[in-house]
Amino acid sequence: MQELWAAERSRAPLDLQLGLGAAAPEEEEEALDPRAPNALGLPRGGRGGAGGRAALAAAPLRVLVDMDGVLADFEGALLRAFACRFPGEPRVELAQRRGFSVREQYHGLRRDLAEKVASIYESPGFFLGLDTIPGAIEWSNLLMSYFLPPQYKWVEKHLGPEFVERIILTRDKTVVSADLLFDDKDSIRGAEPNPSWEHILFTCCHNKHIELEPPRRRLLSWADDWRAIVESKRRK
Image (tube, rainbow, N blue to C red; front, top):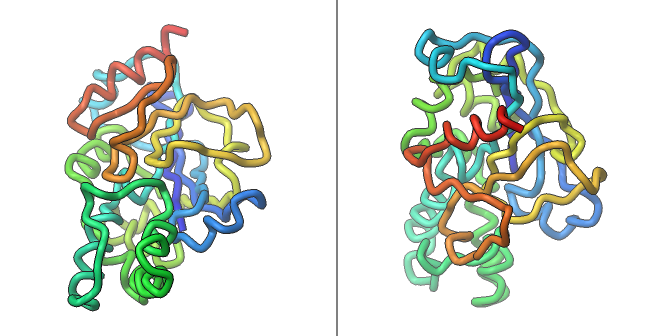
């Protein structure tokens, strides 16, 4: 299941909201993957520290941020759990990951491995146990953060109960109005063929090999210059 974090502020410089939803009809097979396109939307309103306001002072923007692979380390946790539960089975190391669907890649190794890897991310408590991507929590706290069912618990654990109270569910990221979407999936499809947001590809093990055609942009990590991307949207 794939989540989308978005936070929004009506008066503050950056507009963020958070989302989680179900796969679009044309992506039914990918719905088997725990991170198939979902979206989470948050209501207007929010808080930001003085540093965040100073750094991002200008017209408000709405930024959407995917959860798994962008805020939460889905891939690393999955590989470690698979190696622990099935030590004698072949596995896909992070450097060899290709394509968004981990289940599909394991199926390519051997058909039964698809079910085995799926049993990992479908296990109770898996999502709650995900570590954070380096810099993700600091980034979200700087901007202000708001964010589902096991993912609800993850958000509460790492960001606090006030974030859970502001969650709105939506089935399709493309119908959410925003300026930017940070997501590790290279192609986002849904009901809206021309979403309002610019998709910034967040670098993850499975998409490092993808060469983006201009004017598409990539963020290497949260240590990368995300501020420049945000400010570039203000100038348009």
